[in-house]
Image (cartoon, rainbow, N blue to C red; front, side, top):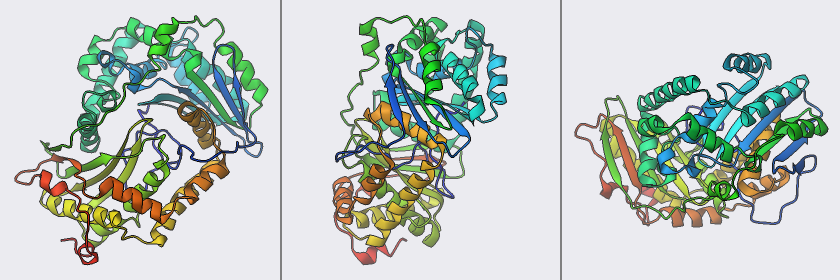
Length: 474
């Protein structure tokens, strides 16, 4: 099971993306929106939301189930319980053994995935239309009737502990985990989705049953189906899939709908030693949230700076200076917080030059030294992703479900296209100046640093930078 389902990475990069599998341009609308024709939303008496979008011209069907309760909703003492429950849903139900679940998943012949994120959990099946009844039956059984068997519980805890060790052995993932822990100190957004050995060893099967009873109540779930599908068939299965669900205490149910507010964190500069060939560098600043009217501009700004082979950072740092193989920028966003991140992996001796080159490019963009062509190129990347995704059942099912749990509505293809096209060069320049000019990045360098260090004074973004300075990297 995957911990996250990222968008397809930019060629020659592997961006860390804890976002769900939807196009990166997904944003909160600022203008009045029209609704896409062809889909229907139904709210069942038990609170379950069902979204169906028929696509008569294809043979595939995708079923995407979303829980509105993710890792961010966990109490600190139960850190990792959402991810643990996600694993355990595949370890036996009242009607199926672990082996039967595995065999049925393979028999569907498509993809069966799961992903725990900060503000939701996703379960996803893609298969042929003739297998839709079996796919719905399997998925609804997993969501509604897990056993939490003690033997399977102990075995799966060991599996997750190995997953934690795997992350510790991956310096890029570890750098992100440590950066976010310091960017969101003592906050759920800074805790690892998979939990820690200490919190996992405290959990019991009864803890998971109680959490599941609350977090997977139909009121917290969205079932989104797209493809060659009969809406009546989907509704029939969803009506019966949660029949007999015991309603939990309303006060406890509301408890998991509340989010600890994010209030910001002090700037930091950290150097962590690890026995690696490269230094893994992360620079970050606060950025617009998912619900901010600047979210689309923030995403385009990240693309312009470090989102592709023609981006500023890729061209300057890799192609011209030869300092890094892997470098990219990303605008991570949650409902009330965001982080603008820049990542690079470099030789320790090149750390100082890489930081200077990155901040020079950031300062240039903040002072407006980018062209209309660069803006149009960034838009083109997102528009292409939007159009390609519009033709696939998997993207539509996931996007519809994610929009529902995040924004409470579904946006049309045309509205998303308009949202991207409406961003102007002046808007990007204004946002870049607000985010970067005169600011100090938080930074983390992880690797075999030796005598090389990341220094706070080197993370300041000047308010003005000359054009000649931009052209000189070293």
